[in-house]
Length: 217
Image 1 (cartoon, rainbow, N blue to C red):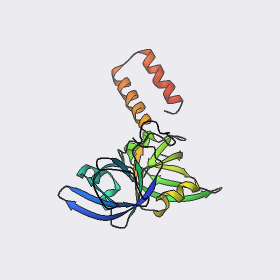
Image 2 (image 1 turned 120 degrees about the vertical axis):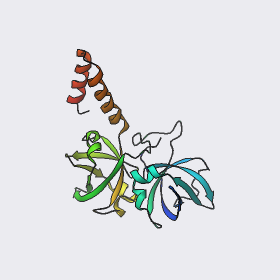
Image 3 (image 1 turned 45 degrees about the horizontal axis):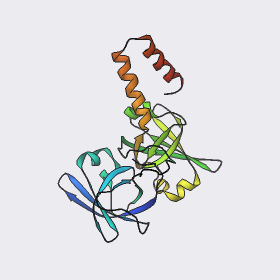
Image 4 (image 1 turned 90 degrees about the vertical axis):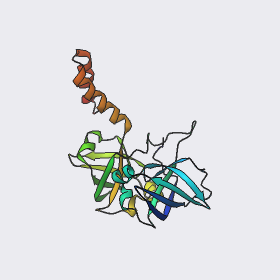
């Protein structure tokens, strides 16, 4: 599990296609970056396992499903990526619960400067829209962000200056692809309400669903 608070940036140094998978060699900016083989690291929000370490370069293997669902499908050498090590027991959870399981990709639409903060609007796939609630959380390229608003086709995120300095968020521009991971709590609530509607006709269950919907879940 991750927090969505980026620890360091990294640079993609090598890309080695091996059948249905690809091995990425990534050099973290942070030195030393305290990891070992077998550790999990979120790369632009994608949970990947360190296969090997040579010098300061970390090597990760990504399978076909990961390539299909994420922005890794168009990765090139020199690309800058967000990096976060997996959360360990006893650490503070300052962002929100991020699993590193990307749900899909979105496309950047535009930016708007509002009193020193940036509002960025991103087009999101139809199947992810039920999980986008105003003032809720979403991970964009592994960054924990607050949802400032949403429509039937987009989500708008609020970005503070500190986030722009520490992440790759604004190395990307309108038209670029970003990874999206929905809030896991929103996903479980959505699944629960779907299951309850189909399998339970009791007054109590329907009353609970009505209350959740009234409060924005």
